[in-house]
Image 1 (cartoon, helix red, strand yellow):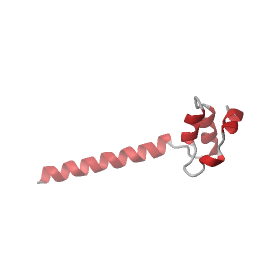
Image 2: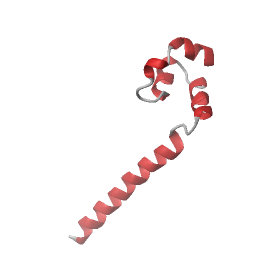
Image 3: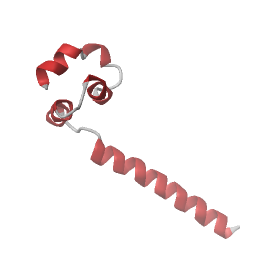
Length: 68
């Protein structure tokens, strides 16, 4: 019973740590980082994935071409 509790706590710690790591290192923190991510994207579809959810309609292929 105690081993199961320890395993569950360890798994919860790993999952929370992974989410925190992703948010801290892989999500653009400001507009400069966002601009750099879009400028370095291989194509429009990849750049569109970077744009925040709900703002996809504001980002058009012409914008990508101008930045890249």
